[in-house]
Length: 429
Ligand SMILES: Nc1ncnc2c1ncn2[C@@H]1O[C@H](COP(=O)(O)OP(=O)(O)OP(=O)(O)O)[C@@H](O)[C@H]1O
Ligand SMILES: [Mg+2]
Image (cartoon, rainbow, N blue to C red; front, side, top):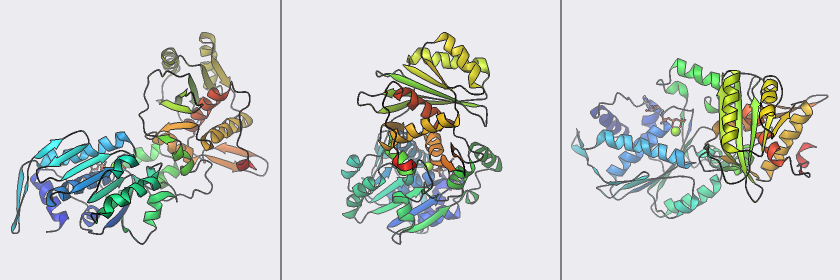
């Protein structure tokens, strides 16, 4: 029996209404050793690899399956999907053709690993090459493979891990530029290729799509939903530069031990305010520990929220974009707190703050949480536009840059006391 048929029988037996899509069946029935799937967001990719890893573990005793994600949060989330399948199918017995399949209980379960009675196990790991190196695996899945900062290091760790056992390797991802291991796999002869476009996943409704379209810029839509590998050539902040500044930790609102700096941008295109807070570590690097967006909140609400943040975090400097909506907010806060710095975002000032951010990122002095997808996407889309007479730094037409500007203001605040900020010049000539 094909794996897709067995999977569907199980879904039916567990009274799940899920009918596997054709692309999901094709993936399950592809026995190639190396597979890669290019997908739109939310189509059911993680669901599918969780399902497959579970089925393979049960059909193949003594097997080891590794699920690898780009952050700890993502790896817990993926493992939760594996557990959903396990719980759905505990103690189910299926007769199909001449075979009987029983799916007996598990031997042990933790938050990231499950062991079955047949001695097979599934382990979900975050982006940690050292941890991966310790395994010999029959099957390795890399979820959102294009989002790994050190993807080639991960590749180097995985290859020996599957070499001994003739193990299989599967990469699935939404694209993130013409770069990195995922793009290499997608364009190589070695991998068997699969595609999952959102039109092939009708559980995503028209209104879901409209919601997503409203929250994404056209460039993000092209990448995240239309699965386009964007060119890195014209990016001011290419993915490789962004990802070298990414680290796997959770952003949270807690006062750190080191000096805190805050940047606040009031979005011009929609009613949104983005607040970024970082701590400056003893080695001078700047670690973003909090990012928040206030959407459509009235003036008083915004003021009291920002005041609470300032009281909680005791920042050394708060840099506020003092244009438009920012003017009255700045005026009020400046009366109540000493360390508020109003920045009038003229074209020159914007250029200086963006260059400073660029320089700090080039020098790997900025640390961004791996799960900060909106910031990462906006950074990637941000452009330096050369016209006949001027240079402009902004998001492409109709797109947002409030996360980028908020971060740039925060970096500006953190570097301001230094009299000698080094600006990376080679790029700008
Ligand atoms: N064949 C199917 N029919 C209906 N719903 C499905 C099917 N396959 C998956 N789903 C549902 O689609 C939703 C999204 O699944 P999942 O999180 O696995 O997608 P994803 O592609 O990994 O998304 P993301 O891009 O956010 O990581 C889940 O609620 C899942 O149950
Ligand atoms: Mg997923």
